[in-house]
Image (tube, rainbow, N blue to C red; front, side):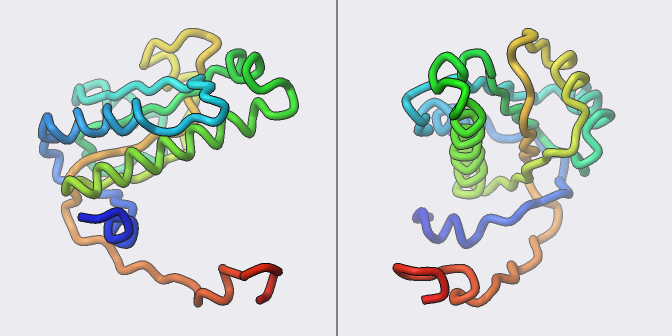
Length: 173
């Protein structure tokens, strides 16, 4: 599947079959994480890939946005101290969130290209997720991505007309 077709096909899946992800998919996601661009080459992010069914159940207790039976959950984390050291006070948050956003997109598009589905989740109790995944104090969970095989086809995307989202040269053109 080419990149644009993968982007067009990707939808959030909130209901999964519970079937374990094939090893090559997890390995490809690991590669996508390792090769995702990082602003200023900061590389201040950390990723915890959780595949253990009991640990996923435990995470779900503290992540109201995590539903269904995902085969894996990727915990996307940032090290604020490292971001401060790399980007300074003015750009630390921007640096962290840009890098995590780029990595999240790479993870979800990689999964889609290999026949798996995903869903980004921001509604969770961060201290509990940090404790469950053994994060050190300076590393904070920022986003979860559930991964698995969707148990039903995703709904078609309803996009705004291009003119409402895209302008050329000046707003409204």
